[in-house]
Length: 345
Ligand SMILES: [Zn+2]
Image (cartoon, rainbow, N blue to C red; front, side):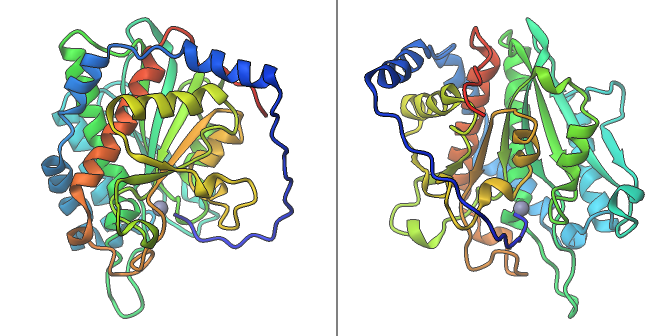
């Protein structure tokens, strides 16, 4: 997550309680048919706490030196992602061994070295030009003045390894004859901590046309529990799901009801919410282009943006469950007959 304080004006939108509105919602709900539920369950199970843990202990290790944008340690992390996708035989949308979308230092006003978004994808079997983008930033804060490393295990090692495991699950499904109908892009963006620059660059230089980008599921911190959920950690904050597409909101709910029963907490989705998380991670650059988004987030905790955000504090069982939820939601978006409908602006 990026820290920003906003002064803001708020618009309160009244809810429409007419019968026709209710009927419309019911029609949207009735129209959601979960695609291949058995296979969703089968391949979601390939996403495991132990593999997430293995990757996260590497990705948040001291040797990456806090992954400050464009630093040597950060580039080591970027290469770890690329090597992973090559070893898993998961392709780059650029083809060959080029998994990087290079962002020149000039784009960062020369404040940081050049840096890379890392892109891997599973090509759709029926509508390959339409794409679901699952994103997570891979940069963090580097090293403090005393030389302590910001490991960024939750922020955003957790989202990074979630993408790696989801890509593997979709690849395995494809190998078994159940590849997604639409393409899925695993977009590891850089430079989030310095102003959502990597996702901004992608939306200015998209690989798939933005008009063919069905949705963005963005993950930034899903491995921990905040102070409001200590008693029952079976939750995740869902932000943005209903802002552009009512259908996306109800798909997210239907998938969760069918398979996971996680408490989807909408506290931070309120339009007047003071933290303004909707505007504070990479999904916003997609929403800004009228692409429906869901932002998955565990909320802030005592180690947020501190050198104590370390992998030993991650709840890997919970990380597994949340990752499976996102995987299943992406599966539905990629496979259902119609692309989701945008009905708000
Ligand atoms: Zn973050």
